[in-house]
Length: 251
Image (cartoon, rainbow, N blue to C red):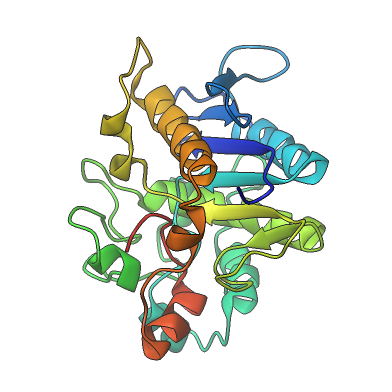
């Protein structure tokens, strides 16, 4: 095993504002050898994005945790070239400036008209081209679209990066090999795992988060996690992934 003592799965939502409680937000946490349990806000009910990210930051700081988050951590390489962004950290700063969706009262929809930072719905990252069903981060307004989640989640990821770069390894941007002793934040695509586990009354959002937490825990327990953290990429593909990011489990 890798030394993680907690495994977190998060199903994400880019709806409404940061303080709205959303049924599309769900989190599950597992400890080694235990069934994942649903994590709820202190006041009960559904999470808001602001509450969820506060809890996640505390969890990552409290113990060695691997957290799988269901939104894109970066955009296709063409986006980096268009806007002259040298690396992921520059991307995060620039993105939050143009899409301040972590600010009170701001929605993804309100930021869309005329926004100078965007892309074409047919643009895909390398990891998305390696999957049969992943959609572009620029494809809004279609069934199964992930664009809103990405555009709502990235500013929070930037906050986490600023505050906890010393305690959290952001995979793969800090390297494909995790830093010993640090928590690990990874991008996931729950569709890769969710059918392996019976839903047992969980709704779709809860099942996605549950499946991620359980897959992370079981994969680590069986000693297979290092295999997924080192996908079979060429040197050129690795350089691309260090900017675009990668989906854990895609190989």
